[in-house]
Length: 407
Ligand code: CTP
Image (cartoon, rainbow, N blue to C red):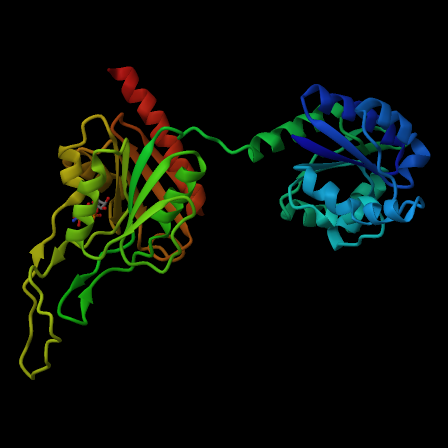
């Protein structure tokens, strides 16, 4: 993985040489960008010798016109070719410029053009570090998702004792390594074929009316996206929703519970895992009229039959597939989830409360409890549905190992 190392102008700039070496020892390719002030503290040649690569110091080089053009777009190339940008030492001035988007040299323009992971290791005098302006700027960077490697406390070059000393190069290198692990996509679901149902079903009353529910499909789609990103082949059987089919996922649209059942049974044989996130209607009208029912002044009632319980049927045919159901509850969630797990022969049931505002049906967030065949009850506090999807898939992989170990 390629790392751009931005070196700011501070006494600690010499420690950036040690950091460059520590990063290379961990297998990173390092490209150094120095501010003009940094070059007053340490020679660019030191970094060139350590990294074996050209060190970048200015936005425009005063060489030939051809060189000028390539140097004018150097900050874009630096931003595109590196996956992590670590700034050490990050001075108060650099942190302020990053926070407010000022770009007046190569390092700050490269930062603005950069879209990858950013690690910031500040170093400055204690009063500067504690100043409300710096505190506010650091918080802006943190809120942007940047990793801040807090400075150490100790005797500073200015003679003061307190926080402000650049963190140890090994600690900064470890933060970069953690960022790279977070960037590298996990492929732990490679080889799995995951059948996922999502969204509501629509049960026609006549040619223009139907019975349905408030499911948006967001939870099932988040599961499909997360599973595909982790290397699974995903078959998504979706009721009518307003979401775009996820990239890289085979998406099969269906309307009714009967159609959903048929699609699931058709594709069950090839699947290794089944997740039933759909909110399937429990009742339908077996043979609804094609025409629109005319209004009369008499009372009207609908004669409803139960729909096929798809999850229960898959439970009967599950063999060694991992089977996960959902339980949308407004009452006693854990007990109900356990009951459904037993009744429908699932390995896990994800219970979600649908009566809270902001979570459950329609919302972008969810709050769930996972109950497993191995007896665990795992609450997952409120989070974005993609994060909930990640936790569900993690738990399924644990469960698969635990169930294998039992046999
Ligand atoms: N489900 C299904 N087919 C149905 C009804 C439900 O496959 N006809 C699945 C859902 O996809 C979900 C699970 O069963 O994974 C639980 O659905 P839910 O409606 O909450 O449970 P029910 O069994 O219908 O129980 P109740 O209505 O009593 O809560």
